[in-house]
Image (cartoon, rainbow, N blue to C red; front, side):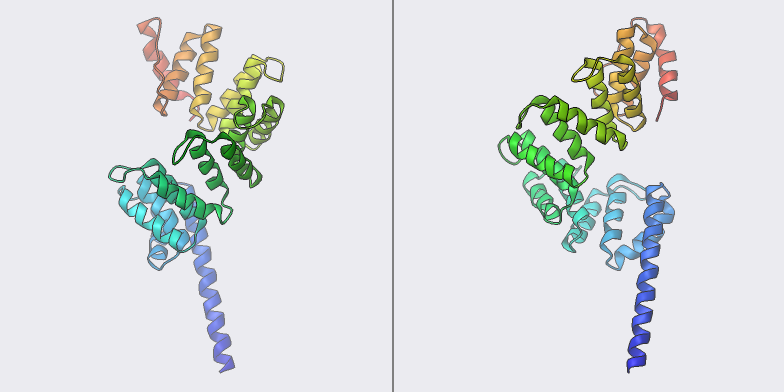
Amino acid sequence: MRTRAVLALTLFLTATSGSAQDYETARQAYINGDYADALAVLEPLARAGDPEARNILADAYDDGNGVTRDHQRALELYRSAAAQGLAKASYNLGVLLAEGRPGIPADIAQAIVHYHEAMAKDYPAAFNNRGILHAKGQGGPVDPAAAVALYQRAHTLGDLNGTDNLADMLRRGDGVAKDEAAALALWRGAAERGHGPAMNNLGAMYANGIVVEQDAIAAQALYLLAAQTGSVQGGMNLSDLYAIKGDDLHALAWCLWAVERGSEAECGAKDDAMWPPARALAARLTP
């Protein structure tokens, strides 16, 4: 009996190890955009009840990555993974319900429930998103001080969006004593770790000479770095800088780049002949 027990345990550990390796390989493939290879592994794991696989599969259905977009299916998968105790699934479920989807109305009250589930497990991003709801007065009254406390917790846990939002509250003195030097330090730290919004906000500090000496060159470099991470506001700030310098072609090109990525800005040109070269330049700008 002992021999059989040891053999059974060995087989179980081997199977578990293999599944873990398969999952990690599939997860990396999904991150790299190799959706077909990733889902070939993740779908069977999800059907077998793996919450991590269900969470990624939900993301695939939510965004239409390698499958036909199906928000309802994403909702079901997030719910099942969250019910299994996976903190990031609770967080993702909160995001989906806070934003809403076609056919799924936003439900802030339920989003808060799921953010709190994730917060109970110290999932960093959940603190940031719950703070945003306090700052906007969604699901309750506007409460800047509560937002600051949650951004601080998110920052402490390593969430760079929380760091960025905390710095912004400090810069404005919203819900906390105004401290532009502390905001600058937070943005510098997050920028050094590659956070696009922080790079953009640090650039704005240099552009406006807040705490630091005004430096348009440093601002431009930071805005460009931010845009390289996909920061739409970084692109718009580059557009504004080029406009100030009188470089209308680059100003228009960066405006078009930002609009293509979701900015609601209205781009204009002094000369209609500028549109074709500006569009061509925008297509060549950093992704």
